[in-house]
Length: 189
Image (tube, rainbow, N blue to C red):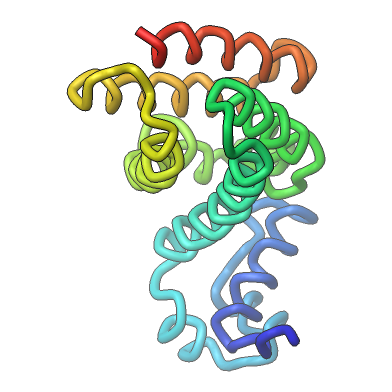
């Protein structure tokens, strides 16, 4: 049984729908309130400012991406390299069909690039959450690398995958295989 949608969920969903259809610049708190069927004050109470709403949207989308990663690791419990390959491939496949990501990355709505820094130059919270989840999934495999080197290795993989999410250079399957091959070499040493 699904949990009932909260007022906050409705507001964030409306913001995502507006962003993917008309661009982030078209999202105003008044229009968002109207779309979500709440007062403008309720929007501010639930999500705060427009920048806070942007970060909420990005972090909630990140949670969906990380569920894809966790499912990939669950499917490959005995082979870390294969788990990484599957996770990268599945994330890149998911990214290809993600309308919010496309709206953010392509900025096809004029100079509507306010969200892009949340995935690039100001991606600290996104990277921190992703690295924390990946670390928790990698450690049980007991990789042959010391803790002092494991953190930078995970950081490298997360950043490379984010780069491919933003600007793919090959098929998800080939990119997953390539990144897993590199990660496997590092984690096995």
